[in-house]
Image (tube, rainbow, N blue to C red; front, top):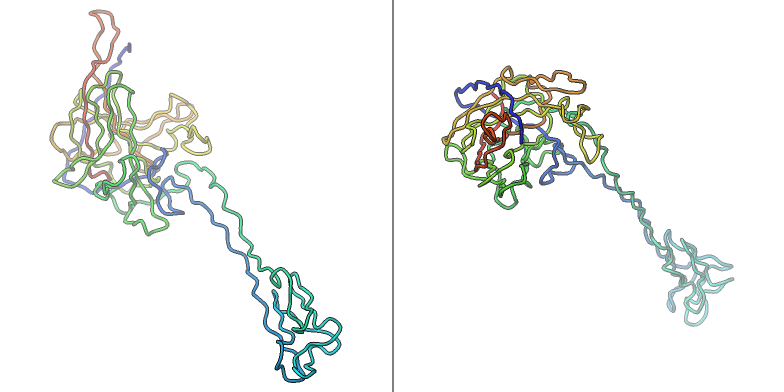
Amino acid sequence: MKRLGRRTQWLVNFAAPAAILAVNACSSPASAPPTGSTGGFPATGTGGSGPTSTGGSTQVGTGGTNTGTTGGISSGTTGGISSGTTGGTATGTTGGVSTGTTGGTTTGTTGGTATGTTGGTSTGTTGGTATTSTGGTGGAVAKVKMCATKTTLTVPLLTNFDSYDGKVEAKDWATPFNGKTGADADAPYTGLYSYNDGTGTPFLGMVGGANSSTYAASVSNPMASMWGGALGVWMACVNASAYQGVSFNVRGTIPTGKITVSVAMEASSAPAKEDPAGGGTCMAGDMCKSPQAEVPVTADWVLTKIPWSMFAAGAGTGGAVVTANGDGVAGFTFSVGLVYMESAPGSMMYVPTPAAYDLQIDDLGFY
């Protein structure tokens, strides 16, 4: 059971449609973007190829006409050199019989002494094995804080979700933003995640979007009973301070009639659990809190705009005030809560009322 406190409601500015932008989140990425791109996907270094030695050239003994055996043909890494007292002089009735100390010594990577009537045919492993050096595989990219790299936002729309192709689950989908494409090595990315109270049958997926568009992001649960759930948007960290605030289309069935919108920032986010070198810089544990604002939600699509000034300040290390001003934005969460009722008259003890919820977000960005 939970004792509820008074909650502050925030106004929402509804204005003309506006474009939207996005940011890189510290949550685990979904589908991996191109190597070297930003947005939570580490690049993997690739070892280079070393030099490859070439085969030897053919040496033909001088003096006399080679009409019999080949008379001193050698091969090797750098080419065998026929040598000897006479070095492959063709003599005799058949011509081309190599005579000399050894009939031509072949040298190379492993070499091989030529012997026999052929006058210096090289023998050995292969006359010098060609070797190829292979560079080491690149090591794992070091974790860095969520805003170690920051994209200056120039295209306000983060995503309208229509790049989703239905081939992967919504949690594995990701898309570039800020006017970049998947072919751009420096493209920042954004994607989806969700979390919930572990009750009912929570769902994260794509549904039909606002203004008859193809897709919108959605979280739902036919019966939540603990506290509710949330839709999360991770993205590459951006400086969107040139814009007035956050913009998105929203609709749904919400038990309380409103959702809480939080702006993820490095100073108000805790370090990553899997590697403290990543994530945020807030060392206040459960007291870390992102700037937040509450907005109403109805069954019809509504374009909602929240200016930076309407976000209540968050908290960082040591209770430091963290203000949303558009600089250092690294993601959003849209949280759905349940209605709490007093367990018994006069008890001052409150419990959640189990209920269904369905939240849909489209055209997320800045204005």
